[in-house]
Length: 178
Length: 316
Image (cartoon, rainbow over all chains, first blue to last red; front, side):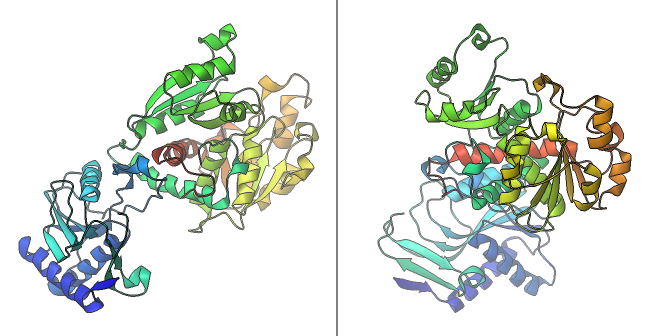
């Protein structure tokens, strides 16, 4: 087990991602952040906080549960559904930034795009992730990446966030079966 | 969890998991796109050997919102009315590749028989068997009570629910007593002695013969339909006397606590167990129970059918 990102690495990465999001979208006026539960939702809140600190205006932030759209539902026991909270203004004609902790096969993001389609039609959809660990199985890439982590398939990447795990860190563990 | 046969098979966390799942799925029913791909390619059979409107169309709507294929099979107009046995019917459904059978049957225990037999491999969901149980109704009632009265609490601790009327013939009452107790609520049954089942003193509920003593002390009043089609004998002198002692009317509604709600599983006998003005009053959540029923049944189908099969107790 090795530490891939420390607490301060994570803070710096999120700050940079926040600036990149603002740069790409010419400010925050058309932005809506949607985090994918569990940890993506916390990351989205943190990015929204940083953006508000920079721009001085609040950004609509919500959560998007993708469980019902997964393509591997039948291979595992039923999963509990997580809350989906769409900001009051909706996503119609907004620039939606999906936020997740780890980008791996890309299947979660495919499911998220399907889930979004059920809620409305955004102007565009972007993707921000804390860690991109490679091994994509679908033609999906992230627009904003905290850290590219070369991994082998047998390794497991664990993101811990202080909101639920008591501290901030990204770990690489050997011998996972992912 | 493979089958849903009885509330007594559920743990408290199973039940709360189903209610939480229903809460999330209710969002779909409120949204612009009432359709999810989750059960695409699954076949669900509605096997109704007894009349039903609400439960059947509610399960059908729930299955369709999750993109399952639904086959409706009612005893009338099928070979069941020609005397086909449950076994042969089940084997026919198995041959058609049914992933789940939602069964309503006049015989208590029919869903259990279907689930324990080797006649078919799919999930069995009890949609009401005789005078035994109606678990999906109890779950939607608990969902409705939680939504109105729990103040953000997860379970129903501290709430008091009166179930009033024809307890004897009511599978809804039996399932509700089990589930409400499981979730921490207190239950009082109100009925004439003739409409209480044998052994009711062993149920986890208070019993009262005086509706007026109870109506002011409870958070929810659940009225039951007087099931005249199951009454071959005389259980009360006449309808007017019944509704005077055990019916919910405007005077009793006034005695209820200000936050309390009026429930009825339907179909109602307006004028018998409930007066029309009470059924249509602002306190009544009877219509909302129907829409909650779709969300709760979506949750049942999701939990039973969406994932790989798992053992009881590890639900959610």
